[in-house]
Image (cartoon, rainbow, N blue to C red; front, side):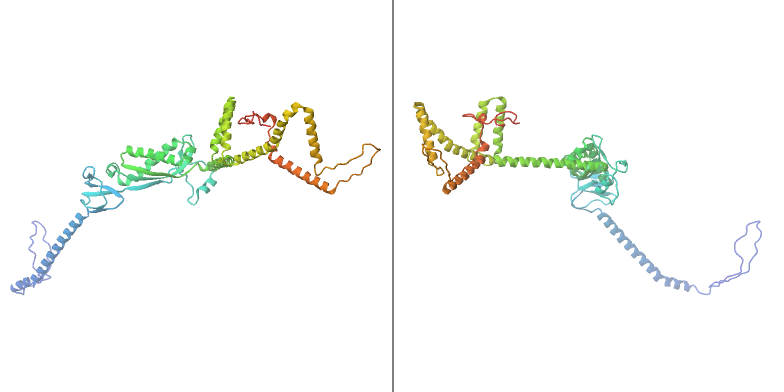
Length: 475
């Protein structure tokens, strides 16, 4: 053990320097142990040194194992799972690798060099972009389109930079919303030209440009009415832009989900559209009524009858009556066919029935007079007297006839005649029957009787132009 000593220091002062004052001794060190104590101390330190050495060796082995694990993890980090619906390529230090034509990866577990040496760049094979605000007016988030239309004012025009719009070929404005689906057909070309994160923006820009070009070549009516055609044109023009960029992307279905005129004029345009639709409905209704009328009059096969009528009128217009009669004969044969149906066939059936009735009455009388013609030529007075006597006999033979005899000679006679009740009743019955027959004749025969100008022997009885301005039968 040593103690502090008051002996002066061994330091030699510099030559010429003033001598420093000396301080008295404060401690003195004295060695009291022998030389064997040093060996004992070394012996006591050996276990500690051994423990430290063992700890250092263990730490080194753990560090080696950790390095090996990190190397294995690093190597296996190059394995990447490619999911269904994904496509992409492998790059080694940024360069696309793989056999020509097979650079695209396929779904499954893909081993490759780990990053940053190697990388598997993936893209969704199918995706879609939506242009909801590019060409759409800006209005309150809580407002519907109808509410925004009702609140629109012609004094508050569209604001460029805030409201999206399109300019049509006629200088009108329009608003649309578009959804476009696309497929990455060639990911090698896509990733060679574009960064993965910029692909959607590129497709969006191409669709936007295609929509602008299509609107500039279309009128407002075409843009709003021809829905599928406009969408197809937008797809073609947008695809041309993508092909010019060699993007390797193919557009699929392009849908213009909403399209409207400027909100300030949408109300007026809606009324025009409503009127147009009402006009279409009126035309369809008229066509349906016309078809029902034709079917009701001539049956389902009315087209052939209409064709014959048009031919008949054409022949009359040319003045060829022989050809018109031939067509009319053909038309009559078709109408009188047993398979003909409709009101026209019913009218013809009633006419044929009327013809039979006329033949059975007036025809019978005409034949009787024809038979009397020869007797009249031989002795007209005798035939007339005979006919007069036959008529007198028929009158006197009637149940309602009453014969009153009076003497030829004598003075004035004063008669009070009263008919028999039976005869009066018979007269009333005959009068009722006569009136009934006259009414039936008026209902069935009268309206269809032809006047003298309309009767033509062995030929058609009525001829009318299409507009009924010329020809027989107007009266």
